[in-house]
Length: 319
Ligand SMILES: Nc1nc2c(ncn2[C@@H]2O[C@H](COP(=O)(O)OP(=O)(O)OP(=O)(O)O)[C@@H](O)[C@H]2O)c(=O)[nH]1
Ligand SMILES: [Mg+2]
Image (cartoon, rainbow, N blue to C red; front, side):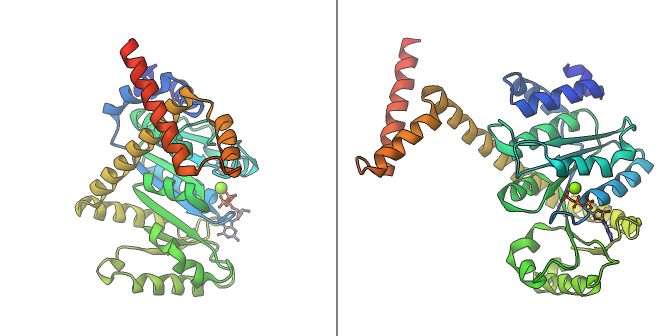
C-alpha cells in the first residue's frame, strides 16, 4: 500500500484516506512511513461564511492549476457535523467537472471518531496526498468556530472569502477575522456593496503593521463568471514566493509541527486514560459526585490521575 500511495495510485490514496478518517491502528504506522516523502505539497486553506462562494472559487482555481499540470487534492471539511452533510454534497457538485480528472481528488471529511478531531484527521490526510505527489492541497472549511482556526494553522496560505451584505461588516472584520487571512477575496462583486466592502477591508489592513500591509492582497471576484480569478491565482503565487523568500513559510511549518505534536500528545493521553477507564461513563459519575458536594473538581481529577499513574507503574513492574 505504501509504495502504491507514493506512486500516486488513486485507489491506494483513497483507502489511506479512509484509514485516516476511521482512525484505525494501522494509520499511525502508515503516516510515519509516508512522512519522509512529505513536504513538497503546498496547502491552501479556503475559508469564509456559508455560501460565500468558496467551492465555486476553488473550482475555478483547480482549472488554473490543471492548466499548469499540477495535481490537486481538495478536502472539504465539515466541522459542524460528524457526518458528511448537504453542504459537502453541494461542494462536490460545484467541482463536478473535475470529477473525471485523475489528477484531481476531491474528498469530504468529517471529524467522526478521530481522536485528534477534524484538525488531526485533516493533517494526516494532507500527508497522504503530499506523499502521493499532489502539488496543491486545498482545504475548504466554513468560517465558524474553533475548528476553522485549527484548519487554518495547518495551511501554508489562507484565502479568506468575504461577500457583501454580511451585515455589520467592519465590526466583523475587527473581531479577529482579519488576522486569519493572507489573501482577502471579495467575492460576488456583482452584488451591491462589493466596492464598499473592499474599501473597508483595505482600511482595516492599513491599520495593521504598515510594514506588512502591502503583502496582503485584496482581490475582487465573481466566481460564477470566472472574473478576477486569474488575478487571484497570480496573487497566490506571488504571496507564496514572498513567504518562501522571507522564511515565513518555514517558520509557519515549524509552528504547525509544534501544534501537530501537541495535538497527538493530547489525543494519546486521552486514549491512554480511556484504556484505563470508560471516560464518558466515569465523567458522568464524577460530575454527579461533584454536584452532590462529595468532592471538588480539581481534587477529583488530581486523584484520578494519581491512581492512573500508579496503575501504569504497577503494570510496568508486572511486565
Ligand atoms: N452572484 C454571484 N453568485 C455567486 C458567486 N460566486 C458563487 N455564487 C453562488 O453562490 C452560491 C454558493 O456558492 P458555493 O460555491 O457553494 O459557496 P460555498 O462558500 O462553497 O458554500 P458552503 O460550502 O455551503 O459554505 C452558489 O449558488 C453560487 O453559484 C458570485 O461571484 N456572484
Ligand atoms: Mg462549499
